[in-house]
Length: 409
Image 1 (cartoon, rainbow, N blue to C red):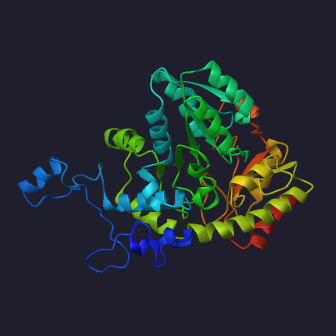
Image 2: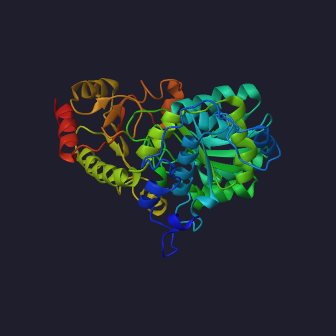
Image 3: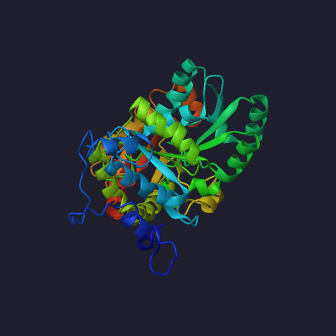
């Protein structure tokens, strides 16, 4: 880490400082904000430069599928945040940025599991990740098994029964039920059986939870969500301290499968990432108020939010998260009740995705998890009355007022 990033005292900078400064490009023109490197290819001065690059003497840029400064800047910043507090800043972790969260998840799984390998994961997953693991990867000889809540005892049993397991994959908090899984315990069990632990950290972000420091081998993100924060791009990321894995598997999959983001998408995401610590503070504070309101409302059958003491994994969340996040779910008991409620909202937007500055509300069974068979949805706790909320940055009183009006009408 350079002196500028370490600061004059030599201590590691705070997360808000790193979110602004880590990986920033200081353009020779003097431009304060780095330019967008909107180019497909890069030129060489002469054949000597080509020869030096071929011989590995230089790290020249050649083609934006292989590397682009806008992408590299975002990767450096995100790696620094995921590794924040470990003592080595971005020197200890590397990241690769993808064109979508699903491209990142696919690369992490394909880089860790080959034909003949097995994946163990939780029952409830983001709908597209569920489809990838259940239906797509088996076509390539990669089998899987679901463990409700990744129960440690059952995980141990399944790893013993399936010695070909190369990956344990988890989301925490889970989408959309907000179930929390103990990362450190899961990592210890996976590693004892030679399996790699991959954690989707999209809901929490590195501001609230840093799985690499809890024993995870790989972190994946949909950068579309809180990392960008403004609903303007689609993107994903893979982060790990295993540089050999990142170089031989993840970077290779980026180059050869081509899941490359555009320079402008990386630039926009980098811009959004600079305010992530500040945004998450406000998101979380408001979400706690919203969750408390919903838990106390007579029309709500159940409220799922890790920050509530009633949440089954509240203590795990307190231990491994800096705050409980801005995602919550609640159950109105039936599809008709959920539909009536959603039709009455005025401020909160009915939309998939999450992590935007405005509040987004969706019906998982009809929207994000519609590809999951009904019996599997039921086993995962995704009822027809379940509603998921991504709490935005509006005034808490206005969000609560909108929810109250919809519930009462």
